[in-house]
Image (cartoon, rainbow over all chains, first blue to last red):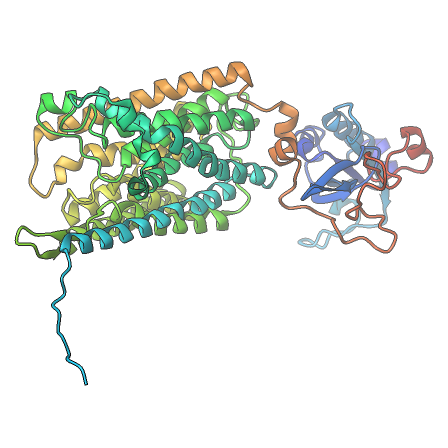
Length: 121
Length: 472
């Protein structure tokens, strides 16, 4: 365990990405040493321009775009490495690539073993 | 008080027979039409949610555009090809006389529902990436030309029939009762050619060329579509036994129950055996019985006996159906793993291979005993129809590719053809569930301007960051 990781404690890296980038992101996370993740289908709004939907010739605004939310909790691996891995893998350069957030995690429990804290992660 | 005069019923029995027979033909035509929703559901279930609208558009186009083309061109082409490739001779005006002859229209409709079945098979192979304009051109061509030529070579008395050049040379006609090869193999092979030429869907093969599954969005729709197809298939097979009442030489009427019973039974046994065989094969291959393979096997069993139903013994039909169902999985794996062709719904395995094998083997299980000459004729027939379909559809797809491009852009394939080709979403989310302020993407009519507004969503990137960001 590196000093940096010692200092960081447990971190939640939460990323919202393009659905078609999920496969690349999973690969990148595995390569970064943080293969465990939780994935959710989400919809949201950011800088990506709204799309036009239509129903029988009447238009409506689709400004909630379908995204995938990836959550990755790390202790040993520096959260910065995980962020870099996701950012690289999810990048296209177009609006709508997504965002990555890093949050502190107060505690963790591994359900199977009952381990608490960093060993649980 | 009057006299009761008893007048004996004076009716020409041939009129009764004709009336009953044509009512039967109309009913089965409607049944065969009902295979269209079956195909639509089967194909829609096997694609991803973002491409369902495109699949539905293709299926509706096959039918709607196809009947127009087949009326104006297709049915006449079949007759002309029949005459050209036999000693029958060609009379172009007579070939198109059905257009003005109301007495010919029931027969035309009966022919049309078969033509549209061949056309609609193709969309299952090329789903999720073909340009819609390119597909429209192909749908018109297969209903107006490719399929009618096959029909002409066989059912309209052409090359392969008893009176055609090959048939007359061998002394036997090609047997394909309801179109296992004429309809199904034609569609299945055209689909294979289309799938090859348009290329695999993005992500179907990895960088090593190994196949990666792209699961469809609803196995429920696919299996329900299969069972609806099977229902319509009774019209396809049993209805081709179009004579319910025949007039006898003595002027009486004879019910053709034995002939109808044979096609109904063999159709049913073939379907059952195909499904069971596919269940067994898929279980031995995958470890567990798989609903989609069983559904594919049920259809392949039907295809395998479609050409054979009046010609084979009941146990022969059962065996043919079982062979059709058993080879679906290996034929599909061969298409994907060896040919590297992304046939989305496996139409080549289900309609092409099962149709070819089932029809070629008819003489082996024939009611009247084995005939080597007939077997040669069957193999020649299968080869001729397959070769014509490959060449003709290859040329049409190549021309279409040059004019429109066969394939949508990579971005559009990613986004889905529903949005890209048709501007719709079949499964829209977050529509009409907005609060009073309509902030969450309510069905906002464009208020005055033509631009779609974003409810404040579009802001400069810097602003987003300054605000602490948003979720994207």
